[in-house]
Length: 421
Image 1: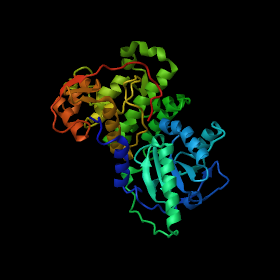
Image 2: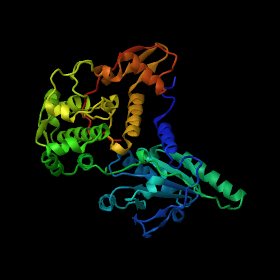
Image 3: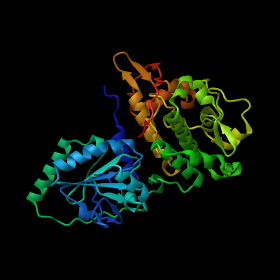
Image 4: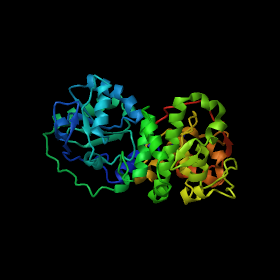
């Protein structure tokens, strides 16, 4: 049987369409392009870039799959140069993009600097990577991950585009006017919350192997009162602490991988100073994000006497999806993503689906369901075994009619850094 009835890519595309971004079949407006890098044009509009096939790739220098797709996109550009146009779109600041392009010379693509997010808001990608393929009339042919494109797919689109051009005269198409953008689906590099923004910048620096000392110092010097009052709701708390957990783990292990030989000490070490308070990775995960749970209790027991600091900072409700967002540095850990409170629910849903799809295996012949180890370690966070099965059925990873035997897989603790979405 197929492991997945609804792939993460399809799931992502459905979300993008449902949230008022352009979807398959839509006609895209001739959107203005205000600032371009790596191009002789300083400003223009989408019409200036259209070809038989136009590929718009929403890109982030922090997005590892986006980076991995660049050589493939470059190969397609060379092979189909007469019939294809490729435009990268980034909401990062111009200085970061200029620096990135300078390290990749020669750089093959024009880069749209969309700092005001006007171009991005039209498509509303719920997550990166996100690639839109348009025809000559700016009609959306497909929404796909750039790495899932192939020569055969592109050749098919080009062939169909040329046939359509030969069979009928060009007819102007009335653009579809989109409704007001759904703010919950925005992709923001920087949150409006200054504390969250600090955590994002720290994580970005850790992901790109930049110097992180400045961010560590800023976190240390925060006032504790600001830490309490500055994170106003659970979404802001989850994003702040998830980003910090992933950033500290990644930066620390890049600096000294030998720490991982004693993992117990690594996770317990209270060497993370935030607002004058000492934290360990365990305290962030089990004290703050899991709301004062005892680490090794399968999620069934809370701490009897949590500290005052924990009670002041912890989330009000445990969200099982954090387990698909925290990266502990091991090969079996979920990949690191760039989380925002403005779109957290969408991002966590995608992270949960992607991780469970990749790590879950159901054998129809033996009726055995193999699950990742974290679902065993924290099973009560997921509601217990029965609710785990219900969750997998709801996500169409498991057939609705089965009652499987559950087995939990071993966790692969092999050190694996740079595991990014």
